[in-house]
Amino acid sequence: MFSTLTYKRLLLIVGWVFLAVASATAQEAFVVSEGQTSNLFVANHPGSSYSWVIYNEHTFTTEAKQPSEISFPIGDNKASIKVTWAKTGTYFVTATETNADGCTNTKAIVVNVQPNTSSIAFNPKEAGDCADPNIPTSNTTATVELFAADGVPLPNSNYPVTVDYKVTKPDGTTENLQKKLLDATDYSLPLNGLVNDVLQDQVYDVVLVKATDKYGMEIHVSTTAGAFQYTIFKTPVTPAIQMN
Image (cartoon, rainbow, N blue to C red; front, top):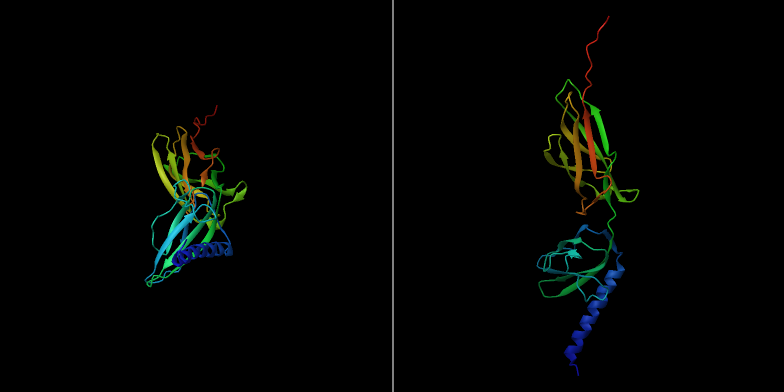
C-alpha cells in the first residue's frame, strides 16, 4: 500500500504532466524547418534557475537527446537556449523555473519540424564579356536565386543569408569568398579583379559552397545549378587596314 505522502507525490507528477500538456496545447505550435536553429526563452527572473527538456513524443517520457534529432545544450540552466532541429517531427519543449524559495513552475510548447526544401542556385549558369584592352582587370557579379520550396521564393523573414562560394581562376588557383545577402532584392555575388587578356580567353569557375539563413538553417545548394562559369573573351586579332 502507498503512504499518504507517496500518493501526494504521484498526484503532483500526474498534475505536472497534465499542466504541461495543457500549456503545450493551449499555445499555437511553432513551425520550423529541418536544420534551423531557434532561440527559445522565458522571462528571466533574478534568483531563479531554469531547466529545459525536449521530448519527442506527447507523453513527456522520452527525451530527444540524439544529435540526429536535435543539438541541445543539456543541463543548461539559463532563461534562454539555442536548439538546432536536425530531424523532422513533432517535439515537446518544457521549461521549468525554480525560484529562490525552491518553488517551481513548468511551461511547455509544441514544435513542428518540417522538411527543409530551401535551395540556392545560379541563374544564369554562365555568362561572359569581351576583354577591354584599355584596362587590366574588370569586375562583375554572379546572380543567385533562393527558394523556400519549388518555385516559392525565400521570404524576407529568412534574411540575411550568408553565402560561401569559391572562384577558380584561369591559372588554377582558388579564392574562397563570402557574401551576406541582406534581403530578397540582394542576389549578386561579386567577382572582382577579372583579367582582361586580349590574347586568350579567361575562364572563371564559381561554385556555391554553403548558404545559411539568419536562423542558422542551411539552404541546400542546387545539384544542377550550383556552379557558374564566367568567361572574358579575347580580343580578335584584326590585321591593319590596307588599300590597293
